[in-house]
Length: 112
Image (cartoon, rainbow, N blue to C red; front, side):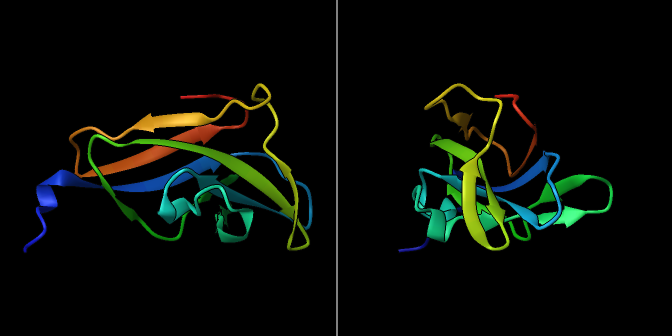
């Protein structure tokens, strides 16, 4: 059975988040592509010299799906803490509607 590409969307994450030396920013969430909340499977974001981080790839996700996600900080390659600026147990959320490509553009502490 052939897959209907119109029912999928590509997503990429971009985040302005100040970090300290030896810290890296990751993203994790409630879908397989973001590790299903397993920090060992979280996706590392790439630091850009323009002071933001971004994912190195685009993920194909099903339209109509709600993605919950959160950023994590690793220090020298080891998990340190979840992002600051959100309420305890609060996740960021994104509803995937009809669009071919979505670039999520976050900042520290803002919830879209």
